[in-house]
Amino acid sequence: MKAVRFVEVGKPAEIVDVPQPKPGPGQVLLKIGGAGVCHSDLHIMDEDLGLKGPFTLGHENAGWIAGVGQGVDGWKEGDPVAVYGPWGCGRCHTCQTSAENYCENHASLGTMGGGLGSDGGMADYMLVPSPRLLVPLGKLDPVLAAPLSDAALTPYHAIKSALPMLTPDTHVLVIGIGGLGHMAVQLLQVLCAATVIAGDIDEAKLAHAKELGVRHVVNTHDSNAAAEAIGKLTGPRGVTLALDFVGAQPTVDLCVRVVGRNSRITVVGLAGGTLHYAANRPPYGCQVTIPYWGSRTELMEVISLAAEGKIHPLVEKFPLEKAVDVYRRLREGSIKGRAVLLP
Ligand code: NAD
Ligand code: ZN
Image (tube, rainbow, N blue to C red; front, side, top):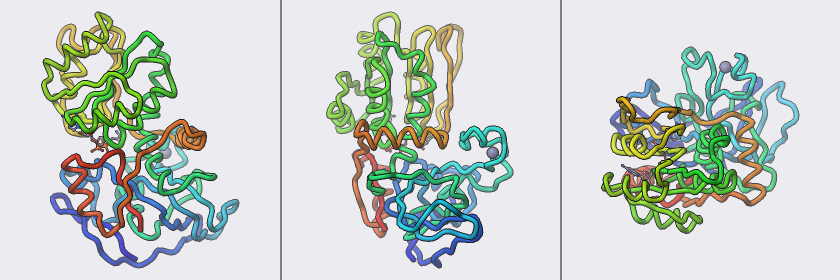
């Protein structure tokens, strides 16, 4: 079967023939419906994140059960499922709470999940090491559901923990209206009554935020003008939650500048910015969080929001063979919503 492989840092992904895997005891074989193309893959190819290649990329996957190994009960061929991406040990206290994204044993596992050290979903088939890592999709189309497992789950986890702060008189700034950000603005509008402000350096992404119902958009290219425009919207209270889906120096700095007292800066993007603290900036009472992905039960919650028609990933579909070109387009910023590869 064809697979899109990470080879080594500094090299582009390669499309090669690999043997179709067979499920061993306890494992599940998935026929891939769609594999989302996440900006994290570009970080994997550009920087040393400690992941050793080669392995098949694609950590945002959904499809249908194609076979089960010995000892796997309760699942049958053809069942549509999403794959929970951050594979933990499954045994530690944190994994037992379903938050495998914060597995206590992650350092000794040698992989962060399928497409992140182990073979992922940019192929016809994928092996999932345990049915614990599957969530049923019901009537949802696996192609459209693939982005739920990261592009929606990651902002959901980040937003959910901040909900007690997000009273109707507060402002949330979302920076980076790409794959994750376009889900974040939808999730915020479903989960709370805070006023959303969308920031990006690309007018097309800001127009997309408007299409999604966001009234206030700010081009953050000029950070002084952006900080001023945001300050006008929030008044002296400032931004209560700044969600940074870029994580570059200018975006982290902007978050520090616009949050008020008793606020939160949440940095999700991996672009390598540093958050500096100096007396009074960020102001007193500000928390800084660096969430990673989400828990298994949170993925169930996200899937139920999509099943109810309350959130809609915007999916641009591409054949698997186009992967290298799709990564190029993602890098230049010309994907609207999320690109999903179809085998
Ligand atoms: P994307 O490429 O789909 O979207 C990025 C968006 O940011 C684009 O709209 C782009 O125009 C905008 N942007 C780029 N530079 C900007 C800047 N300087 N100022 C304002 N906007 C800017 O990316 P994505 O797949 O949504 O991923 C976003 C980030 O989140 C990536 O760094 C990715 O690695 C990271 N990520 C983190 C986690 C986690 O758990 N922490 C999970 C998934 C992705
Ligand atoms: Zn664990």
